[in-house]
Amino acid sequence: MPAGKHKSGHYRKIFVRTPGGRVTVHYRERKPQRAICSTCLKPLLGVPRERPAQMRNMPKTAKRPERPYGGVLCSACMRSFLREKARREGQ
Image 1 (cartoon, helix red, strand yellow):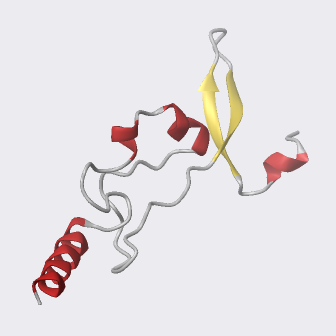
Image 2 (tube, rainbow, N blue to C red):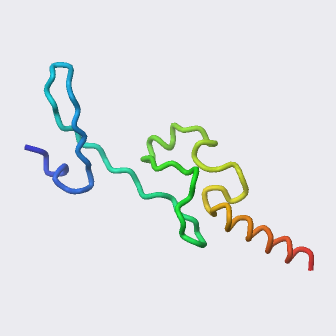
Image 3 (cartoon, one colour):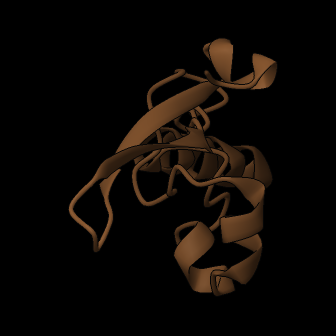
């Protein structure tokens, strides 16, 4: 019988085959939702879906793209934002 905290949808079931041949159920927390662009709300590419503990152990370059506003804006929105910023600077 699973513990009370494992009955909710917060955990997902992982079926693991043990060396003895039995199949046991492990409960693992679900992954978070995909990171989204702050302007167009499209999912960001290059940003992994991992729990905070795994994200802490990743190198900084694996957590988000290496460009201005990486991990906040998608590439199309970043391009248009920088274009508008340059136009404002020129005036």
